[in-house]
Image (cartoon, rainbow, N blue to C red; front, side, top):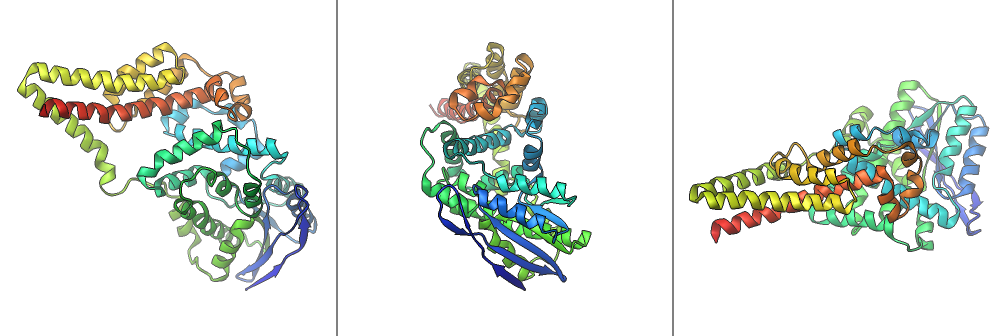
Length: 412
């Protein structure tokens, strides 16, 4: 059961009237009122403030995950990031992707004089002032990014990475059409649509899964804490999906739904065995080479070291790594490529972090430095992330190039 109101409000950026939908749905005779907001609209922030001030709600839910909430309430938290831990936990690529997304949004904010998510800041601030609990209902952004990556066919993943890079280095202005789309939809969706080759690949992990996740979180919080009337602040693009799921009672076990959608994607089928198959083929090639002739076997080993280590070192050099880090890349890549559990980038980035530990000002400048290509190379934090990515890519390319070279020697 649901009721619908649609007050007319004006967005200052273009003075065009827009409809900001309000939907009230019932869960076990308890109410959830959802306000569909425009993430770049001051009018949306004003409406959030107005609704909280009525005193009609006993909790406020926001379309934020813990890390995005932390970035809002503690913008200096990035300065406390432990790069060693990030690298060790295999999170360097996710941190780099998050910074690239943030850089695009920062560039958009500077171009139009807006700050996406202002209504979320108002919701948190006013809820705390009214002594109302703030519920974070969105899925962790790192999980969403990994599920997006997993949902994109493997042959399109380099394009996705290239698009992220382009979103940082591009000097093109954000189009008015994209701003209008952001007013109607979701911050992450709008950002990804700037460079995604096919938005259909993104829809499920980026939109429909998050609709289901947020609906499950609302149902769980309402039942467990017996909230009688929750105010949920969500992007207008998620309104219909969440409302449909709750109204049609599509979730019988919210805990199970949240657990399923929080699962980190893993390689399925033969792909998860591919790295080990490649290692087996390379080692078999070495064995056959030495069986034929010590000279052939030695030549294969040299090819492997020079190509794999050389390309990984080249990647580190492109990122302006410390000379000892470049040497580390050259020595580590041929060995780590024969052990899929340890990546070359992990070893190389750790060496760079040890040799040139980032300073406090590097962390403090992240927001501004990530908006330009030069800034990514000048900031030691982002340079380490680049060293991780480029040395990893160099080693991966080197593995295949050297593998083909070994095959040529065996068949030549």
